[in-house]
Image (cartoon, rainbow, N blue to C red; front, side):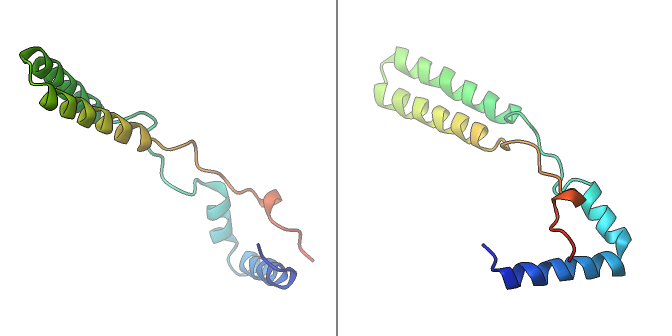
Amino acid sequence: MLSREDSRRLAQLERQLRRDDPEFCARMTSGRLEPPRPRRPSLSLLLTAAVIWIAALILGVLGWWVAAASAAFFATVVIAAAVLRRPPGRPRRITPDQLPPEQ
């Protein structure tokens, strides 16, 4: 957390930037902060996990339990990677009313 002095300095820098380059400030406050990312897990990862799960089932039917268990574990890791790669939500926009008041 910033101290009062640091907050004051930051607000002063923001005011000075607004005076010196208002076009830059408008671009920074009107658009997204980061490019949009996909909202769903990658199709290639899901297909890879499905193929590995099918292989695990076949290995289990053939009696190769250790190979089947390791393939099933690897498929679960691939699914977890696909889910964890998903972004949590939309990037946050900063509007002028969220900035500290000018003094």
